[in-house]
Length: 267
Image 1: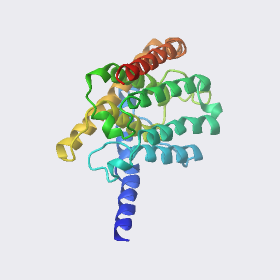
Image 2: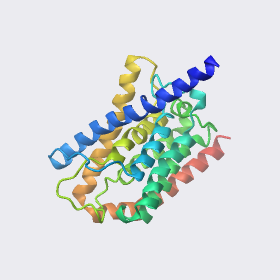
Image 3: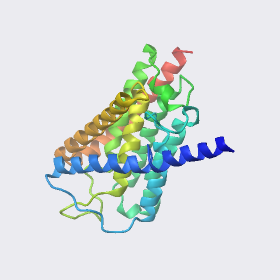
Image 4: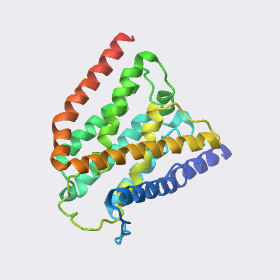
């Protein structure tokens, strides 16, 4: 009974505090404030409305994804984490927005294509090792798998501006001059960027230096995504649409070919 209660307390702490809701909110607010300050040279307005069903759904799915990360001092045991659970939870955030607020989503069909490409980037490194534990995938340093990891990492980063709604495609109902903080995006920064750190970078130790390393690398991933989104916005919506309509699907096909070829050659 005591072991069960301790397990429940550990999972509750992971979901509500770290690396769950509280850590996600703190990380996301810092990144979002910095992004809007750099991109728009202004401080955003605070949200004025109560959390909607979409935000509640995004929060729930993001929390489930966040506890799968190989973050130092994660209370959830490593053998209970799964990259598939993280991928499905994060995928459902975009699908929930499409299902519940499709009129407010820019280019919904194209966004789903990007979502499929992102899933390939997440699950591609797990094909050959045949492991679904995120920490095992990040710790795998086999030279033969480097082409898979590099190509999947690049595809992952390429998808994030669209998944975090940072691409320069204006939503029909989002024409304000001064933007407000996007609660859904705030909750997505840590799961998306932390999952990249978990999958493609060697794990950090369960100590203070490991904690600083993990969050430093995750902030670095967020900075790369912000820089890419600013570049796309600078080039304009036509370039962004061209990249995601004509470029990302062929590149994803190339990544899939690399994953299949590597799996066959390493058997």
